[in-house]
Amino acid sequence: MNFSVKALSKGGARAGVLQVGGCSMDTPALLLSTRKGLPAFISPDLLSTLPTPDSRLLQFSPLHFVEGISLKAVSEMGGLHQMLGLKEHVFAANPADPILSVPDHQSSNKIGASFETPSGRFLIKPGQYMEMITSMKPDMWVTLADEVPAWVTDKRNKASVQRTMRWLDDCLTLAKTNDTGGAVFGSIVGGSKINERIYCAQEVSRRNVSGFHIGGFGLGESMDERPALLSAVIDSLPEDKPRQISGLGLPEEVLQGVAAGIDLFNSTYIYHLTIGGFALTFPSEEIERHGSVDQLSDTVRDDGTKINLKATIYRKDTSQILEGCKCYTCQNHTKAYINHLFNVHEMLAQILLEIHNTHHYIGFFRKIRDTIREGTFEEFRQKFVESRREHAAPAPDAAVALCA
Image 1 (spheres, rainbow, N blue to C red):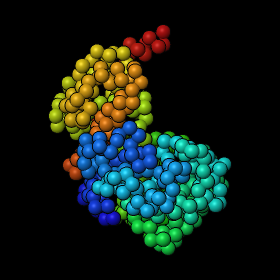
Image 2: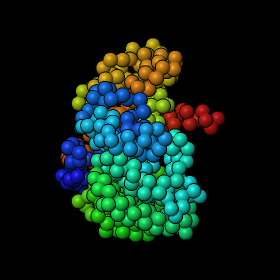
Image 3: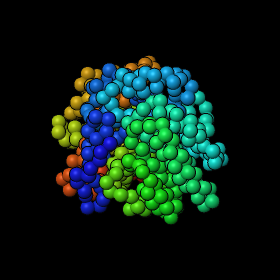
Image 4: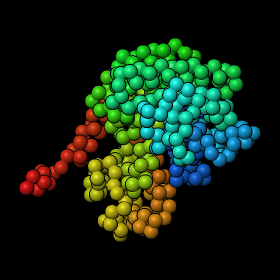
């Protein structure tokens, strides 16, 4: 794996190029969350309709394979790439399932990390985890971590850091012994304590890792205290290695992470939007290139960034989801049709909606990269966040009505 920074903004955001698995991708980039190697509703043939190479970066949890096909069988097939027939895609392994995993500070212990999976809760030791990595042969993989919520005691937080460091050393030793291949991302934890975050980041950076995974965010810390925690970690890391983060999924959170200097984002934002029937509609690269933002002024929105396609208002709406969008869904189907699919409980509704949301969010990341290269990222970020706040605030008449 090779990584290089190509542009820096005033505040710390950076645009780079990541070369891994025979694929070259621009960063900041989105890791598409998957269920057993594939997005929840997008089949392999429909993956080709998404923009490349952005859509070739897939993240999975090895724990999804705890029950089912054996690790030996996966290994004999040649790993996950061969089994799924996605040889040109980049697979990034992360033990935690971002959709199901909710840290339980009572269950992890000295011998392994506890994770919630579709098959129940499992305690995974470093040896078991490395057996999974060796069999599946991902292009990148994250070491085991004991992530805890922001509200745990100082003693529990300190213990989580020590365990994470011990598991990191165990994983690195086993990886060298088994010749697993793939780029290793060392896990950094520390909860909401800056001193523990700094200590963990400094210790991980001393190890022979290819990149860094910053975990434990989105677990109770506020948006206001997050910048200081991120800065503490980033300032302790070398600049020539990629940084990945979990737990930041909302557009504002992504922009907050990019401003701190994060390169890769693991997010379930698209999945949860799709399950809820929401379609992304905020102006992105595609809108600016193919249409006018003003054309969206009559679109019914929930917060200025998405619309609810389950709403009855779209029952007879024969327009595409978003004027100017070039995704497969917008080019071939209407709001009315997707609304109908939701009403009759057809899975095709989620399929078409996930295609649109993935395409659109990838465009959002492209826009972020463009603004970093142009030196306008901070202005873009401020304008985007202010726009979201304006849509989130109730109109004056509505406020009066609520108070009446």
